Length: 181
Image (cartoon, rainbow, N blue to C red; front, side, top):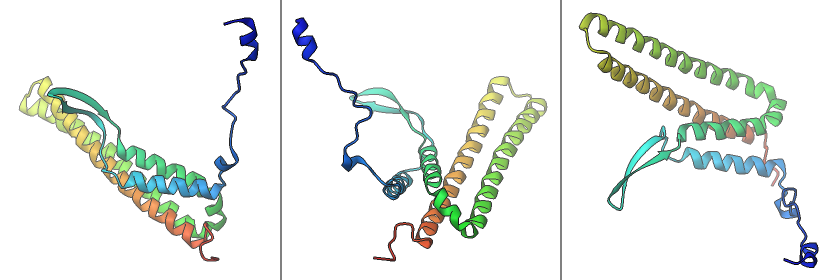
């Protein structure tokens, strides 16, 4: 390339580019996030992990995302987006927040209790039944996975309730100005 051609080439930074149609107000962003929560919540609440699929006669391992975690994260982000407006109506929210916090504390406690029970069970099996370490490790891992699975399913259900509560609160405070139309 000649020096003349190099001088003619202009480089623009597209990072900061926004067309006027790309600019969203907060209510549009909240609505899109609410739609995303609904979309993610409508999917199978799979715990993710490594999946084996047969493609063209070959076994292929595919990493599946943890849909429960994705859904909960989307709901958390929606909550963060609407929190400033909702907190203006704190009386409506206070009891709900306490309920969610209690529910989440209870399932956390259940998760920790399950880990302790699994540890105690394995210790008992080793000492009383004299089963080998390899068998104990497999049994212990199965108990922990089952415990985690229960925790994640309960957590996803709590977040479904949270999403319902957010929708209720947004309607109650007429966030999207639907009553005035």
